[in-house]
Length: 316
Length: 202
Image 1 (cartoon, each protein chain N blue to C red):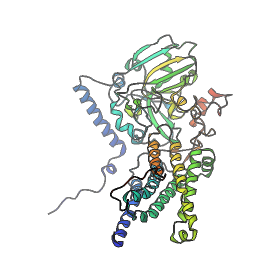
Image 2: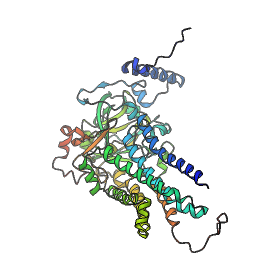
Image 3: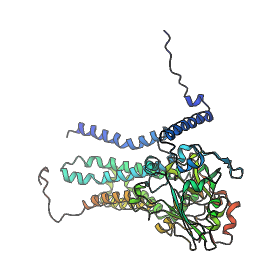
Image 4: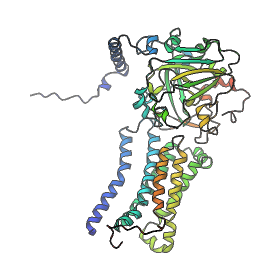
């Protein structure tokens, strides 16, 4: 009798990655559709604005990167998101408590159109684009991530900031039900970050709503987060609930926690070392060796002019 | 306890102490250490160094509490395991985390107090490991005990190293500080004698 033995070739070796991924996407789409149908058209604000879980976007030609992408698994399972936990593995496990639907953004301060905006209304008129950016964490590790989002400038302009708007302050949602670690005192909640108006309006600055072509997973800062690729990762604030145009330089949460260690600018700079970490080199997640850290994380051409004449050692 | 059964237990403890290192190795081989395996290796080898230091420091309280002297015959092995995990921790930091970039290592040692104090703790452990043999104990006589009391200082600097390393969430280091305080408090002379009924002669 012929007994069939299972093949010892892994299915991942038979199916090419692209096809394999497509299948996954297809399944997700089907699941997404059936869930949406069963809930009577229920969709996240980002999905409501763009339709379905796989987002519709164009690839921004000038914002591509000739580097190997950090795998989806690593991007979504190695996260600094202290609102959940100070462990980097925990957010992926815990982030189901975050409910990015519905989501409102409070726009305040020096602008002509302040108000409480539903996220989908903010997103609808905008076209999404995919941009591949390096992400450099102050702790000395880095990734290359395909974000999906829109230039922050195009969103901010709609609020018509006045001439008093010298800085933009961002706040993460404060809700201890959704962010259990906000009950603790690891940082002074809610998380606050800020940019100068010039930094905010720079074409590189992205408001991200997705990664790897999909809606942002909760642990990556759903439904909407900042991506400022030439600054250390902690500047790229997650799950934004408030935007305020202000005249004075905001004090960020990390500046409050330790002003000696964290400054307002936090530009990636291999020549300015941090009290805890030499910033000369970095470890790309997935690699064993160390890479040289690039000035402004490799975006000097686009942003160096913002800091001309500034002492970057003092304004760290 | 008979000599034979004690040496059996000692062998079991020896193997047990090796387990954390074997589990780390297994984690590397099977890609179970997460997205940043190097960070995990350095952190976990450091955790185990502190834990073994505490286990070693709990031997003499255990002897006092139980009135059994066989505990003390495990102490050298546990002390050497502490040194083993400390060496692993330092090697992983130099060889993998810093990938032998000596400019960064030197900068770390001179500019980052938590590294300075960590390295100091490790360097102070070396003479203790070197003088752990029967021969050295005999040769040093009274000085041996004086030298080995340094472990109290090392335990403080080692825990301080952990506390200073942490970025914002000091909860875990505080647990270590608490345990260390208990272990060191055991060394203080008691103002009154506490009777331990299960102890012979007390």
